[in-house]
Length: 154
Image 1 (cartoon, rainbow, N blue to C red):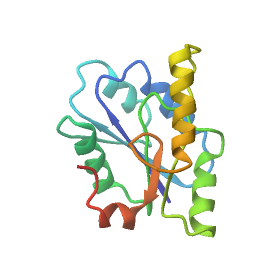
Image 2: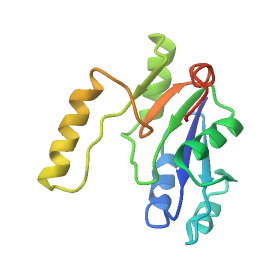
Image 3: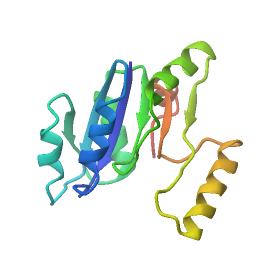
């Protein structure tokens, strides 16, 4: 099973759409939202998704992601930002890759809705760099065992 961990802090503009799109993903998965002390309606929106686990944490993306991983049940962890949309069937593809090919970790290339030149260049750089390295905390998935062996995020 995949556990999707989403750290949030005042994400009322994006979390609803993120959770709606995740609920459309096929397959057995859980969603864990870790709030770092939102002062807007983020938690109210999250509560409107009854199958989503909610937990509070100290603020800090790494701290929040570690907290979410700690309560997650899946043997695969996927860390997303609240403004992220996955491709269709992404969760199935992750499970298939990790089971059939023995992959330990991976990530998705970034792309942006905004058509600014700077974001287009950043997206291109990200795709090129992802062919060599998996890094960061956005769209990153890994086997729980690997996450635990490296001690989580620091």
